Length: 238
Image 1 (tube, rainbow, N blue to C red):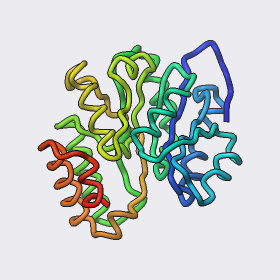
Image 2: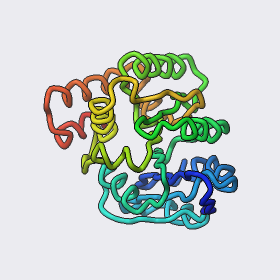
Image 3: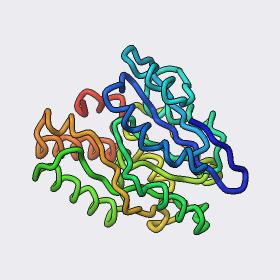
Image 4: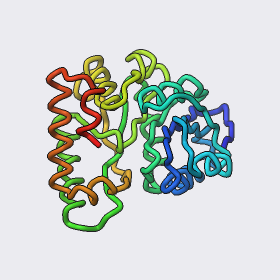
């Protein structure tokens, strides 16, 4: 899934995976038009030891596979280190970007936001009231507190990514950590919110119940903010 056009900046998409076969194909399919248009230079799947069909799906899609130890922060960092694009888009394997994502990314890049980052608007693959309320709450949090979820993707120039130090080898809250550093460097306006939806899997929310899952996420984040090591929060988060 690679097409090189040296006349314009291009994006390397980095997707961390671990037995992500149930949603990966759809996530990759949403990137194909932008790859054909030359905006996406490459798609890198940074795998953490999948034993399901993840590797076959990656191969079928023509994406680059980067293997290694599991841990989303480390996987994202490995994928970024291997990337060759001028811009990086970090995306979860169970998140499908709305069709207009590419035009919005192109507009953001062309506007010269080399020292800003962008995220997309969160939505769930669920039309229920609970899903819509949680997504709306997440967008209020994103806009007012400048605290997006990793499910919303992260679009950032290579230079800016390197300047803030990239992703850290963390098993949890690697998304919060890098956003904190982006904001410390550039202030609250350092994160732009693009209108296109990042439609993510509601599996955890359906399993636990939307209200219970929100409460659990909030509690885990509170523990992290209080200085508890992510390694000691994982059991509670799952």
